[in-house]
Length: 464
Image (cartoon, rainbow, N blue to C red; front, side, top):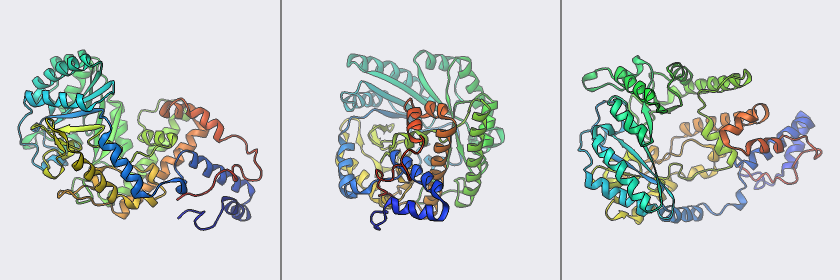
């Protein structure tokens, strides 16, 4: 409930704070609330349309907007047997490879749906996409030729485990400017246990060999590691990847779904360790900045940008819009995690996306997130993934209360870090969030010319 709904003004709150803690504390509190309000963390509810009306408009927009690109699930088989892989459940690792006619139809579909946008993104996914490298070569050439005739540019990417990368493949990726994301979970004892080859054979050496071949070819790639109960110390993992020159880095937790988790997913009892690890990461970032050293790993950067721009994406990944995944048979899915799940088929590359099915999917997602509309942390929440809330039967379940509490703790830490960086390291914040950060920091933290409480008359505390 907002303060205004309770009949309480910000000035009355400031007076109460001043009475208990002094005028200086009240001034700091008002500056902080105004600062957070300007950046979308505190919301003015009275200007928001009713939840259902707002979501109805969003649904209409999402199903009509042009799409930025597609993911091609070029092969369902994989040469690794990652223990936490979501594809095991829907049996997507034992299927066929995408034939060329489906790939060509997928490119035509993507170009049609790209509308008047000048850029289109194509990502090769799997399984292990390099098992179908011949198709990738064809798509790269075909897509660029088709796009050029329409005055569009194609940006290409691939997500690979690296085990099949050789000099020929690396040279092709370099020559055609294909961005690379390499999946590697950490040092040998972690990688070999969580991402083994069939029959529990180790995969670390093969993946590292592929990584070094990419580096030798002059390819800068993103290393993506999955955090599991085997190692919840994100700072230790980051330090390892930095030593091995495998940066930039993305660490993502294996969480399963609201519907259920496996023994390889992060469980409730692991979150205290993750929180301590995140505190260590934040302290390390601030320590490096104070010492004038480079920050090698910053998991807070995306949320810092979101806080700064006051953006709160309702569908952060743009399921079936920003990126639509094409299965090997040409069927369309909201993202790669759904491939093989019949209840989440959105259409096919020949007839396009079924708008009614797409709209229904988005409505059900929003309905599952109704509780988020009254949560103070909603604009800075990292718990929006539709896959996490979707069930096998096509329904959606909201996150458990304890998981929402963890997301709120993460939001608090990001907001705190944003404030500290604004005051102590605005240059770094500017690099993270863009060129407007320094000006914002200067405006927000100017001296309190408005007595006794800065901005208390202009900021109505209608916030969650």
